[in-house]
Amino acid sequence: MKLAPTIVWFRRDLRVADNPALLAAIQRGGPVVPVYIWAPEEEGSGAPGGAQRWWLHQSLTALGAELARLGSLLIVRQGSSLAVLRLLVEATGAQAIHWNRLYEPTTTPRDMAIKEHFLALKIEAKSHAAALLFEPSVIRNKSDKPFQVFSPFWKHLLTLGEPREPFPAPTSLPPCPSNIPSVPISDLSLPPKIDWAASIQAVWQPGEVGGAQMLAQFADGIADGYAETRNRPDVRGTSRLSPYLHFGEVSPHQVWHTLRRYEQQADATPLRRAGVASYMREIGWREFNHHLLFHFPHTLEKPLRPEFAAFPFEPDSALLKAWQRGRTGYPIVDAGMRELYATGWMHNRVRMIVASVLVKHLLQPWQAGAAWFWDTLLDADLANNTAGWQWSAGCGADAAPYFRIFNPMTQAEGFDPNGDYIRKWVPELANLTAPDIFAPWEAKEHALARAGVRLGSTYPEPIISHPDGRARALNAYEKIKKAKAVSA
Image (tube, rainbow, N blue to C red; front, side, top):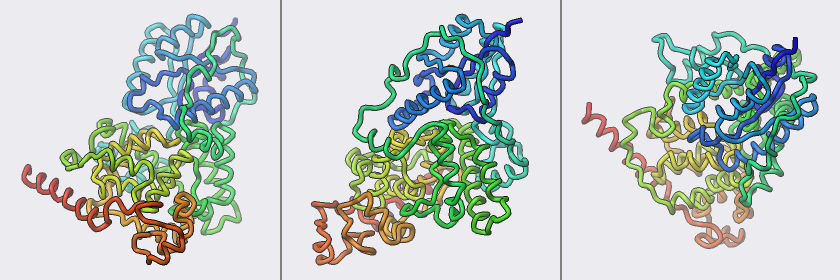
């Protein structure tokens, strides 16, 4: 008896290894029909931004090549996901559709509606857990409520036992019917026509192979010093796995168990164990951020802590643009914003610094910063982006205390001690030495002249002084504290 085909609906799980939906389809028997549907309007605020669209184009191309190597092909369509899946069921006679879950406020109800539609037609429709170590729907605190603080969330996660081992990649795939129409990936017009796409391509290799290589590089040595170097933007001390995790080219299970094996090697040093433990905690933060968005979907636009809805932001397009273009006059901030524009990525410590300056020194809404990151970050993940900006603004879970206002100069001195990171991304300051490079406006005239720096001409004065920016922020926070006290 000839078995009916199974459709595998790829989304942000663009890999063949450790792909539960693909594995289930293979085990079911019969032809497997891999499909990707471009339907950004269904993702709402989670629709890919410009940098992500570039990555997606490259990643789909890589996935298509890998599926072809395994004896299959990738069917690409655009339009309503439900309509496309219905057409594919009719065209192939498929009796099952499998996919891996997403957890955003728009994708979850869409997927549930699609599942209900096909189950009513007696078509098997099954989703699988693949994007997170543990399902956010089942993690609750002792009061049977969602966690809102990271430390108890992380402690609870560690009591759940080791996450499952990753599934191996298939060595071959059942052939996909070759007569199914598919549009060329180029017809999706994904890559934005902007001037930084070429520079991004020089830095990254999207796709499952690139993700495996990045994970291997991290596990093969960078992880050793991670606990000590993770906050240093001037050295290669981080994994750079975030875009691959976002697009599902590497799974959190692969990362977890690769590092566990690395940590448990006979020659593992205390430095290695500390590095792995520190990175595992970062994977925990990723889980926590998805947990928050799943349980508190309103945080996409509104603060988790409702009293902060009254924060007296002062939207100013000129200030926002200066920040976006790396022209604030704070070298560490400008370096970060220029690295972002050139490479589609920014070091996490610098992300916190630039976010603090935007929402606290400049009193610009955190939503404006989140929107810029969403469009320019390759790893722009809805849960991580939202939680990170609310943390910086002091209005989210585990938020930084309102009075914690980063000093851009001491942050630079502490984490870029020689000024090498600044020197790389702000070349007009390249001839300044530390400590002048952290605060050029405080340097002696002869030092500026020798370095060829003319403040206000070759490099801007600070857009606002740190003391004034700090005072404005504290005054704004004081207003909402008083308003909360009155309302209570």
